[in-house]
Image (cartoon, rainbow, N blue to C red; front, side):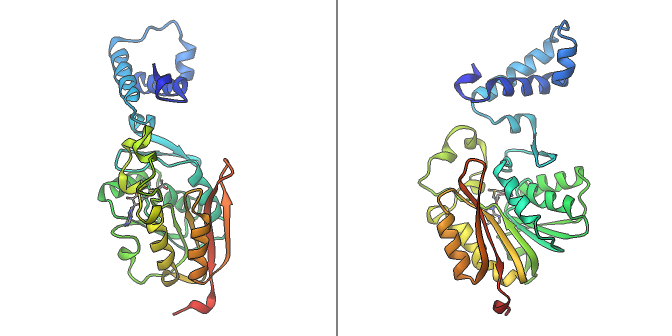
Length: 267
Ligand SMILES: C[S@@+](CC[C@H](N)C(=O)[O-])C[C@H]1O[C@@H](n2cnc3c(N)ncnc32)[C@H](O)[C@@H]1O
């Protein structure tokens, strides 16, 4: 029945069976003769029904993988996407002592950077208090203690602080685009997905604010929609960024762009 709503029905069912029984696939395979106990069977049927109604597997399990670690996820946060791992990899190419992530959601990006750079100081902001509760829980579970979470609008919570690296995966789906109203995305927070100005509003604000929050030669990396590369490069150029580049995701789509703050723009 899951085939009708999921392209990965068999895998989904296996994950949900694991959640219902508390056993790994290997444990279940090792004892195929063991019947499913009635309570586990009922839990499994309940999870299958919810999946059939469209709830994402990650929300049903309450967790998902990102990079080489696992995160708690709830409907208060975007489910981290594999594309965002490219953003983390690009950010990690140039070591940074002070880092700012804007729109941290589950905390996936900030936590990945905090784990890779335990001596760096990572600040991360989000407007959603509920999302920051999840990010805080993830940082604690993963033992990341160099991350400071702040609630507010983009740069507002960090005042005039400057960073060596700013990174963001902001909402970038335009009001007219249908994706957030389809499939699993229907269950994700609107504020994590949609942005005005054909999806470019948050990217524009973040790029326009970056120079005032970057040290000389500091770097900015942003994730964006696959048609938004030209507009993002234009915003970066208009703010005096140098070494502007765009990278593609595994599907070959332009997905992340970044640049280095020119030293001449110091105020
Ligand atoms: C696309 S999600 C990214 C979440 C996470 N960083 C990731 O990559 O999975 C965008 C995040 O930006 C946050 N956000 C939206 N508008 C914001 C604003 N004006 N100020 C701060 N954060 C905002 C949302 O709450 C959401 O958590």
